[in-house]
Image (cartoon, rainbow, N blue to C red; front, top):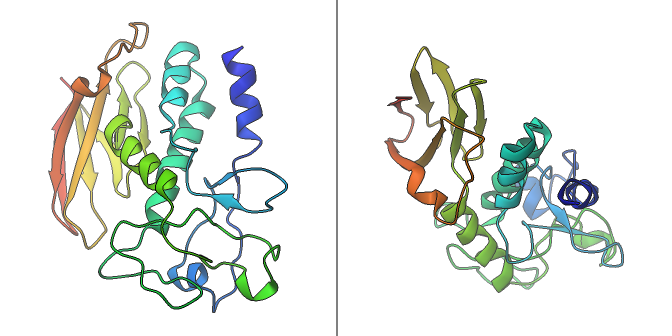
Length: 217
């Protein structure tokens, strides 16, 4: 039943990078639409994340099945959200020209002209509480880098790059921000994840444009 529900949910997740108008707010940001999630077909737009949820259920489903497609969905949903958060260095504005505060996220990812051709790729209005809660939950519950030691699978949900070098995980940070990356080394996928899986995370500090390493054992 969980797999059936996940497959239906996957049909609501944007699987490609919509080409936003170059002069739109999301177009100027270079936002990649893959991983945004449709709210409903009536609204004709996708949105940042799952409504007031993290994609942690897909991590649990991967651990139960070994199907890497669930990891891919988790990664795409988690990876998308920070792209549309307003930041001090790259603020977002509403269509009325109002400045969105750092961390504020609009629920609109307009990939159609349902609110007018001039609003394709724009934020329309300001802060919406549910995508902000989704981003907070995603930061708390989703490992920025997940490694399964048996298959040596590496899933990177954070905006960093990572690869294995023997028994060492190398994390590279191409962004302008110092990163605190939560790393989950999964030694036994058959063991239940439990309620407090965040306690399995190792926090790696990766400087901007720098790298860090984490031992697998």
